[in-house]
Image (cartoon, rainbow over all chains, first blue to last red; front, side, top):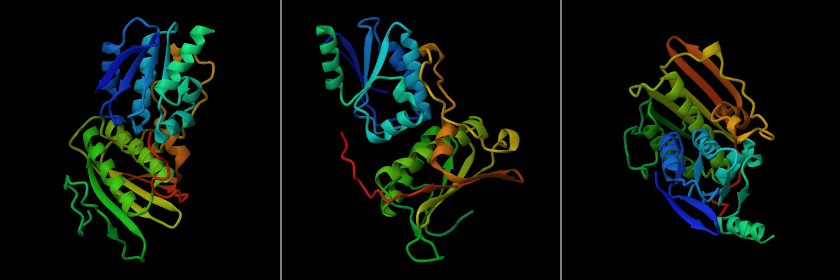
Length: 116
Length: 177
């Protein structure tokens, strides 16, 4: 489970460098996320631009990641491909996670929020 | 169970396991066996995608098929076979005019309550992060995206049959990011 971490514009960006977050790798995703994510910055952006498929196991892993961060932090999603967006919409998880068209768009929003 | 030209164990995904149905021209069928572990399910999804390609099922239709079949297969692996990796799942997909008929058979444990769960996809507004569900979406997705879903148990075999509507979105209508 390859996830690349960077800090950009005061946001922790975790880029999932995998094609699928499915039952095969859901546990690996959870473990990798927990090991990789830092206490700061508080806002975490999960860049899913390379992920073309997510099933309910993968969704559960993303929810687990959200819960790992705790109530005082946020997990935002970016770069959802159509099949991934569909799963988020059908499960109503698009009401839970802020979703950005791209990591860049998400970072721009945070830049604006900081400047406001 | 099935003979014919199809080679279940072929790892080369370009060998499309597509055979013409004797029942009529233009109908396409995939028959394959899947071992009961997640990596085998992944490989089977590759076969499914090749079949969808050959059957000119693409775009949102293909996405729905892929999602439903992944959910159904995962359920059989996790619950019917309970993690036993020596099980076999028979999957048969038949392209009809406006839908894909799907037939799955396994020799795992029976469905609790004797029927497939009638799950709905719950609303998520106003739920505290700590209370978000991490599971239970699978059957909600399956029920939402399929029709005529029937579960039966005959002897020691589970049979699950359902249809996935095909709305004719064509192939590759969305450009990837």
